[in-house]
Length: 103
Image (cartoon, rainbow, N blue to C red; front, side):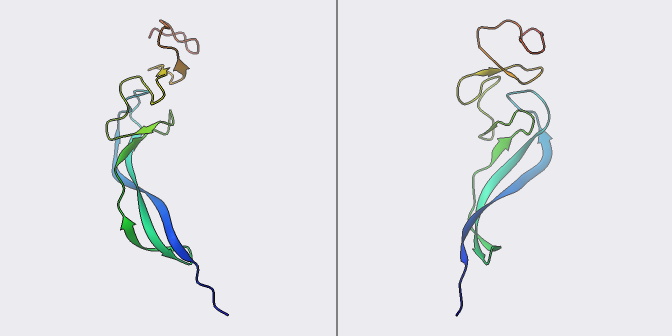
């Protein structure tokens, strides 16, 4: 008896090794990545089936978005982030409740 194990699996690829400034937290740790889909046989990717769109992913604040992010200080869900510590704050706050610095 022979079993064929194959399918299409996603694989995250680093597009640019040069770090970029995150539009959310302001730190220079964001990387350009994309998710490509590969045809795999026995869990080994053989060749790319679909090339994904590039996006910016920040390991500090955990936000990923289009090539230019979602806007300065705003996440996709509309909440703001402190530019100094990266914690979520309300848009009406004048000072960050976590680090105490001015917004």
